[in-house]
Picture 1 (cartoon, rainbow, N blue to C red):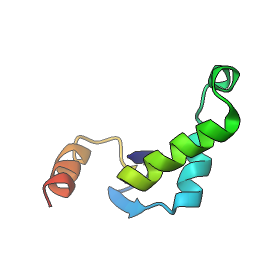
Picture 2 (cartoon, rainbow, N blue to C red):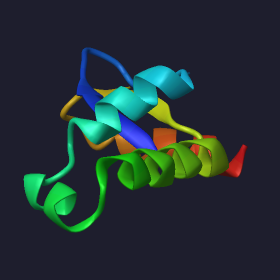
Picture 3 (tube, rainbow, N blue to C red):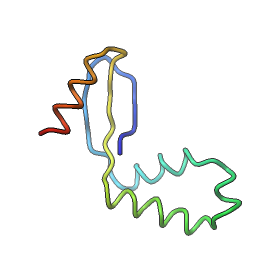
Picture 4 (cartoon, helix red, strand yellow):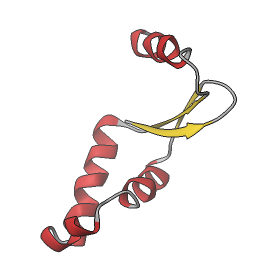
Length: 75
């Protein structure tokens, strides 16, 4: 999973689980918490973070990000 951040060059960096959890919980739609209890939402998001991991992708508004990501996925 990637957190996106505009920058002046392409870079990838791992994100710690606590930071990833905070970032992802901040992106939830409020209506989710009307359907699923907050504790369960936190458990589900943490499970996702633990299973797939999270990286921050810093990128320029440039097509070069495509080959950069392709190389990362292949490597």
